[in-house]
Image (cartoon, rainbow, N blue to C red; front, side, top):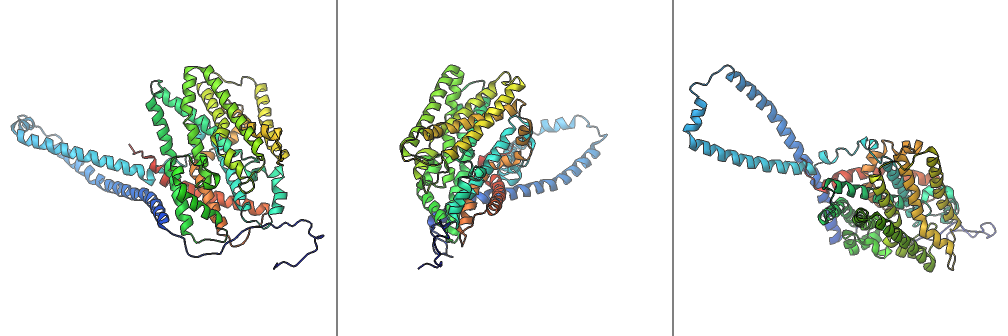
Length: 547
């Protein structure tokens, strides 16, 4: 029986309502042993740096209290000795006449030295874990004065783009009361490109470009500091540092998903949160091994963390590319062209045979897009590879690439035209044909690499002084502190969105203002919690004692 009165169809030619599912509201949490274990792990990881901070504060306070008496004693001692003369070399005679006393004093001094050394080691580790140490430099804006300063702006704008897209996607996929009208307003209108992280989620490709560029720069710098030698030990240490850099916060997020979504009482739209708990309980090991992007999309624990896995997999290929560069530059060019072509052809073939979309695919309508294309290394390597090549060139170049103003003008026109064309073509090709489509296949195969090339030009132009107001904006000191916490912001923002959506008691109504306001709220919370997690988890568990 319908609760809505019947209305003549002539008045409503096409309903704006959609079908959605709900479940009964529950005030009792769903806690089991795994939730308790994960909650304990999260609490322990957060408590350790806080406890270390308290100890460091107490030690500093004790040291400050001891300074004043020591200074006073030293001044008194000096005043007594001023103007005195040692007779008959008494000081030396005492040492010569008391060998047993001297031996005892030496042993005592050695014991005290060992105790002081151990105490200093413990204090240095406590300081390394403390909030006082881990928070240093996070809010500094000096990063804007270093090389590649435009990267901070690109990174943060890409992060904002992703948060905006997730804000809309997670809500639109679950419970909008005007879903059809929303599709008419947003999905087919290029003016809403910022709402969707681009029509084909291009912000992630921007991250891959930055990752490839910085990985090449970092490894080349490490080789230069190691007597210009690329050894197996250096590569192992290079990969281990990366693993240690991302995994503490990554695994904390996995534990947080299981514990938080189990402890919080369920809302009527709690399906997504429940799915995350079940997937993480079953497939947490894939996050530990950084291979969760290779699993079925519906089985991925914390699905937004697929980027960490694919980034690490690509990161492991950087030493090979650097090795080829050092051995033979022509070999690097040949291998890079082959890899780039394989990645593009693979994406095109998968799109052709599976009839994948190129415009705003969703897991609900096109699960195969995410299952076989979106998060797989064999289709996403292009932007990262181009980033590595750009990093090698920019780190080793002897002279500027852009020598004349007209070259800069042509480069900027081409770059911006390519970006606009890629976005526009996605809307032209938004309909998925039931048969093989050559235009769809070609677009899917090359659009991410073309986006990467356009972005690399922007970075290069800014670095060589031809960025103009774009370089000024991307190099603002504001981006530096945000860039320092961007990793934590990326990992925490989906949890905030899922928690907010899952606790809604009624369906959401889309308007531009409503979702812009929602985006700002998610953004501010992500920055605040991201800062806290950066200090307490990411920086703390790098295990770097303060020296």
